[in-house]
Image (cartoon, rainbow, N blue to C red; front, side):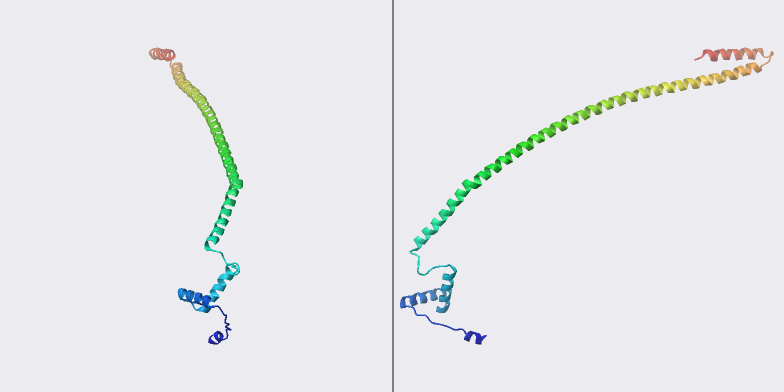
Length: 195
């Protein structure tokens, strides 16, 4: 590595005495060697694309140029804003407003339709409930009637069986059992007359 450092080719440049003093002053200020400050100065000039023949007149003049460029950029931004952005924002806002209005009207229509359908369904269910209640009442009434008819038929069948039994007993009695015959006849007439 030491050998490579020795292989660097160094050159010298001549500068007048005032430039030498300026270089010394800058070296002391930034704690650099003359070769380092010269190298850094040239790299800066190269990177910043500064033409040394066109040295700036003054700091104020450079600031005016920068301010003019900023004003030009601001004017361009304002112009673009007025010509392009503001109309786009207005258009977007009007589209959003229209969309909101359409969405609200659609919501109102849907809610109205749902309420109408719900009311119709409620009325239909109420009507069905009333009709089913009527049918249930009729069925219950008919069931009670059938039960009473069945009960009457059972009672009638029991009477009939008892009458048959009494007539059979009456038919089997002989001439001698007159008292028993009278009792059976009374029972038969009571049974027939009782309802």
